[in-house]
Length: 172
Image (cartoon, rainbow, N blue to C red; front, side):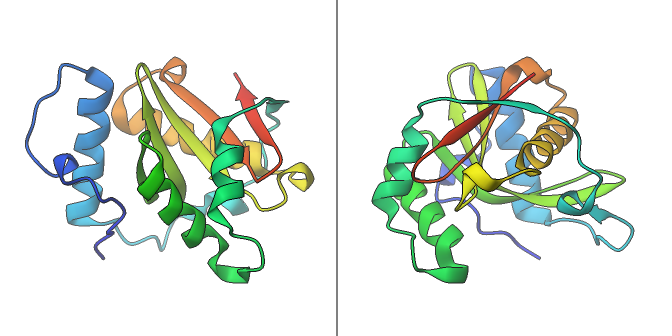
């Protein structure tokens, strides 16, 4: 399966950047984009794994404003695609959506990946973020998996889940 998760053609180009984060992330995205994800028959969905207790902190973030402007409410099952397209079109930091992630045990899809100087942000859109009890665990697992895939420490990542009112940052 091919994943058309990005609109940035430079990710597919064989360009070397002077930024280790960008090089490693773009190499991973190129591989997943071109080869897809291996069969998931023996893997458990990240959302079905036993939860990990993760501390979160409610902080202001531009993601809330993007969610407000994306007008996703009342779109039922299309809420995620509406927000993701809006982010790709309007946020200079968003570089990919619905990115497959997997290891020997688990698999899933990262809603959004944003690339800041020195940080890879892994935001997860949750329409009612204040009610979430497992989102922090899900995002933390995504970050652990992506960190292993990219051979980068946790300090290179930032995890957050959000809606149009709140954004909750993982603290690790």
